[in-house]
Length: 73
Image (cartoon, rainbow, N blue to C red):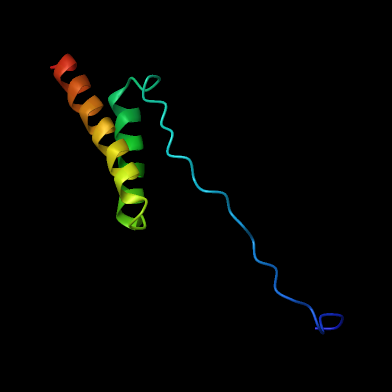
């Protein structure tokens, strides 16, 4: 491409994704299932050093899901 000679590649630095989940705000089973699915997928693709934190969020959401199901039963 013209004008690109000598251009260097610029690396984009992406900030780490936040694992903050507004668990206190989530009330409906639909919302809980959505977040739980999102974080299970994040756990599936997580790097080794990220797994404990993502796993903790999944466990927290799973407990909330079970609690809400029991309340609605």
